[in-house]
Length: 202
Ligand code: GRF
Image 1 (cartoon, rainbow, N blue to C red):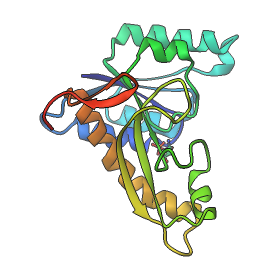
Image 2: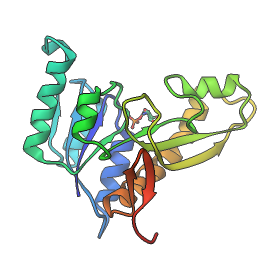
Image 3: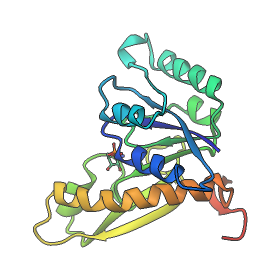
Image 4: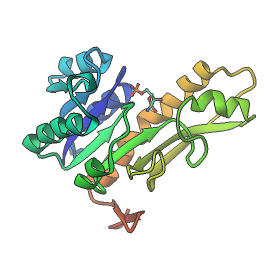
């Protein structure tokens, strides 16, 4: 399966996906990395792996629609099967999502439905949680609320800061996203009727 990854920052999740895709018999390959930031650290990491990159700056376009149209046109030329949002800090419009319905994955640094949105680690600490984690889900119009494919949990320990918790959650993000991508790319999990459903024997 052909994958385009979307990043806005360091791209550690994109790197984890790229490493997984490079293992024998992995059912997906990353054909390009797109970003909305010209200086996203992950762009250099992708290029070092020989993965083509492009960035699309919102300020270069008159509207969100025009920005998305440029991205969609670039995607059409690549004909990806799946899109993997990995630290991509922009909300996609319903038009964009419908174009790739059931074929967009995202990773969020909390155990959804807890803590959608931003600053998830500090919110979990402030709420007194003793467990945190990440969620890989299909992207739907609502933010951080699509059907879940894979979750992984880590302990929250007394004294944790958002940085120490973020680092602990990242370690399971880098295992969860490749697992989710494999399941979807090999057709074992798909989105149907707004749910993540198994389509074969696991
Ligand atoms: C990660 O916590 C990810 O869950 C969130 O953005 C953070 C940075 O991701 N979406 P990355 O290192 O850019 O992949």
